[in-house]
Image 1 (cartoon, rainbow, N blue to C red):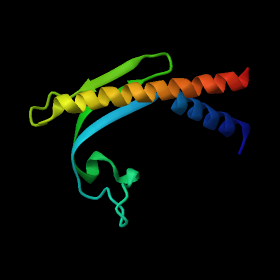
Image 2 (image 1 turned 60 degrees about the horizontal axis):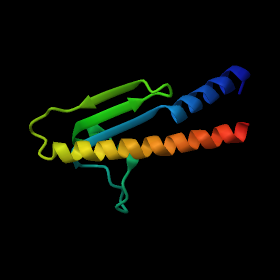
Image 3 (image 1 turned 30 degrees about the vertical axis):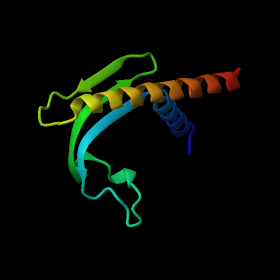
Image 4 (image 1 turned 180 degrees about the vertical axis):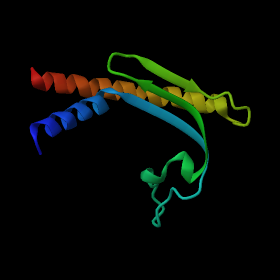
Length: 108
């Protein structure tokens, strides 16, 4: 691997570490379980079942934020899903912030 590729991979890793994405789906999954009954995260996509996107949030390192909230009337428990999404987002943001602070402390 050359220097250019190494720098690119490092840059992608930093972007992945500092950009937080939270998505909340509702519906039923048809092929998301493995034979042993474990959740197959690679199959957890809207194309593998009857999923509806209820909410999505992306927060960049500089706190630029993009939000999506469904207004689909067919989602029976949308209010609860949005509360779940908010809690997941706050938890992930707290964890990500702590991880970044730990890395910054190691660099110093």
